[in-house]
Length: 182
Image (tube, rainbow, N blue to C red):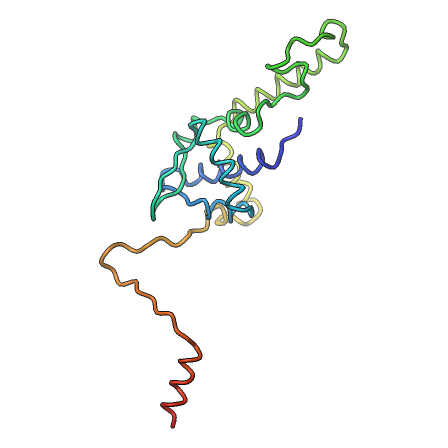
């Protein structure tokens, strides 16, 4: 079994959303920066996850993405199936191609079936909440316990607050300084 970059990065993005669950939407830019991937590549994965009903998106200045339900209710196997298709070890024992023409005479089939069963057991008993907790514990063991947060992308200030920024033309600034000095 081989998981593509889409499956690996998509799962990591879902763990990030699990960590931030309840704190409001997380921007695609924040998720992409955290995964060190392009926003457009992340958006491809997000599109699949939205279609599957695992995440919801909101538009606007405070928009972004968040899990559609609690991290305890989303299994890793579900996420990987959405992003990867099947998660079968070998095609002859998977759910799609269970009717292999050599099924009765294949000496390896019992092993493949056992392995596939164990893989499914792990994938469909591990939730995003489990992965988020394991990740936090891992960071704490490595002395990086405060690094699991998603970097914040600037959001607009509330209406009525003073946020106007000036852009300074440095050439004009220096010219004005020289004029004042004379």
